[in-house]
Image (cartoon, rainbow, N blue to C red):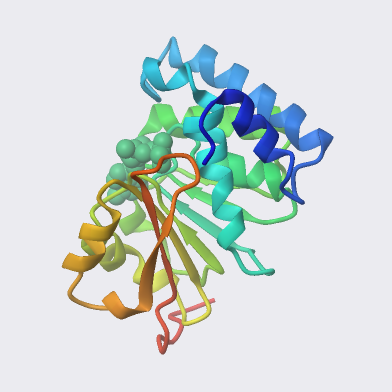
Length: 212
Ligand SMILES: C[S@@+](CC[C@H](N)C(=O)[O-])C[C@H]1O[C@@H](n2cnc3c(N)ncnc32)[C@H](O)[C@@H]1O
């Protein structure tokens, strides 16, 4: 279990994708987030005390559940940048498409993306409901919506080859238990950053794509 800031940084170094440039960019992301959080409420002040554990490693752990091919990676409701900006930093060749509807957060995400030089990443400033469908290789969403609604809103971006990674905190097991459709396609993985949290992982096997 990643229990503190030092452990989070040490663990990040064990990821194949985490080279010196990635660490430099993550340090910069943390600095930018601290500055921006003074202007708008992106994350709680308390969580900033443990930003490497609570946000950076918490996002980066999703990479331990992805297939080899990750592009395009769709992150729903990226908000403060998690996990989208962390994924884009660690996988700079992957086209990470971050969907966010609130204008000030869209502006923050775009400024951070440019500052960090994440040229393959894209910020889509729209409500998810208004984004034309495309087929994503990976779909992630942290603290975006209850599972049933999340799947209803975003299944059109998925085929049977799409990997879903849904950090759900303490409600993971219960949300999956309550899911009526597709329940057997998913399972819960233990979070590495919180002993009480889970990540819902799976694919919608048998589902055909809607468009490219
Ligand atoms: C609770 S925040 C989580 C942000 C980030 N994923 C994180 O874990 O720090 C949820 C975000 O989803 C965005 N959001 C909610 N509904 C949305 C929708 N229908 N389309 C796009 N973004 C939406 C909100 O504006 C907000 O920034």
